[in-house]
Image (cartoon, rainbow, N blue to C red; front, side, top):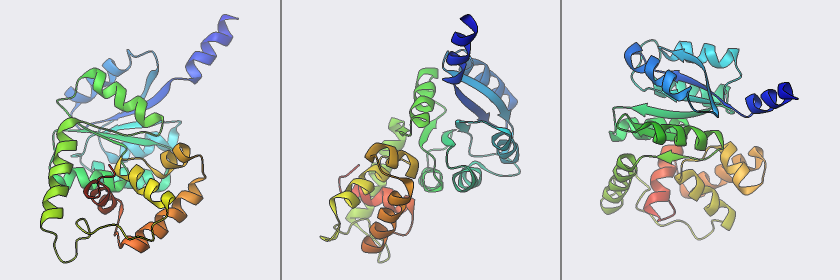
Amino acid sequence: MSGTSERTEGAGRLKVVVADDQAAVREPLAAVLGLAEDIEVVAAAADGGEVLAAVAAGPVDVVLMDLRMPVMDGIETTRRLTEEHPEVAVVVLTTFADDESILGALGAGARGYLTKNAGRQDITRAIRAAGAGQSVLDREVQDRLLATARAKAAAPAPSDTAGQPLPDDLTPREREVLTLIGQGLSNRGIAEKLFISEATVKTHINNLFAKTHIRDRADAVRRAIAAGLA
């Protein structure tokens, strides 16, 4: 009876890879996260190549990702994971909160973005949310995105669509999808939220991007914020 209980408990734990090029950050962080009953740190990686190897060895549910790493940085690693292992969620944990880093990571498919001012509870909450297909952005990141969107909406560049109203021919479902993209959900997360398949989500996104002239996911996040949907 006890063996069955242990297997059931273990099966429900989120398997996490901690990625940071500094051992002084990586190792204590892995140790602290390992104290959570529902989290199991299965690997610690010093660069993007090690992250991809750990995920390939799997199973992995969430990668806690630093952005500035040798060999392959966090944004490129996130992009590779999104393409090759879409079932694996990425939560960025970094000292950088500039527009390029935030939009680059979210555009690559990250479900969460935290700065290293985040405490243990913030990090574990973001990992759990990402594992459930949801998104968590810390307050500094949210404020930065809102400020950027407002600035672009106030003075849009000729090629920028953020300040333009959404077209009238968007369907209610396409608006829902744009809202969820703006909240940081992945295709899988959107599918689970709306109880539809990922293939259907992709169809809605393709239609949405065509109608609104949105270029990519980062552009969609800006557009959703500017339209008051996120």
